Length: 299
Image (cartoon, rainbow, N blue to C red; front, top):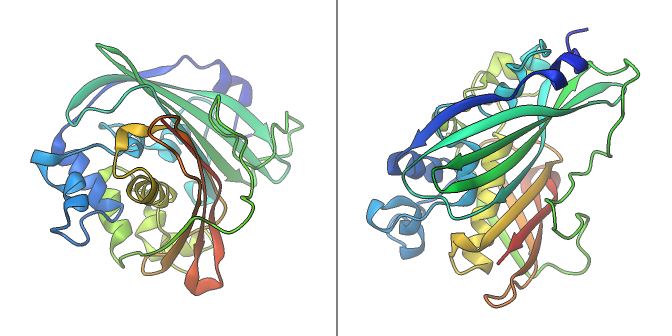
């Protein structure tokens, strides 16, 4: 069996020193669509080094390390075809604001392997800390098609659990408080992959067809970051440090060149914080789902 669950779970954590600079932060922000309009003061928070703030989702690409999907497939006990792999969901807890320049130790291990019958699900947990203590904790859920059926634990449902302490995920009720349409550039995936996720699914048409898609798809984590930026800009007055945790399920794919419709529910206050829920759909494909069960906890 290409996935040896026992071996994957028993493997010792993989530890690496990671570092980043303001240029890495700026490149990530551009990769998720920041900088439009280029002279807008709100956008300069993401693009100009003298005003730079770090969007918490930068944690998913910080440092020279394999990204979630590639990182999971390089762990002991996992030997599968990359073309059968999809990123199923992501959860992030921020322990304190991310610095614009930093060095940290990232410790990663597979914490769960689930048998979904027609697929296997790997859960890769990464914790990062610097000299001052914990910075962030993230969990990536990786679906490997065709690798289930060995009689293992089925695990929780496909719905992404909210981070610890957060309100439960689910479909929001009522009309959204904010609706935003975000055009995705034709070259967005090519730009985003410069932050470290060079999976050919996002650039190579032949590989994308082998994986079952009509053309290269946008990184799920690009949509993830783009959505968090929208929450911060529209509901948190651009204050990135108010984000405490963020979880989303990748319910479908987005393609470069499409328009993403982001719907937000919530009114977090500076005094008491609060919860923001979101959905993301692809406008040109009849509002096909892209992100679901999306929850941002704010301070």
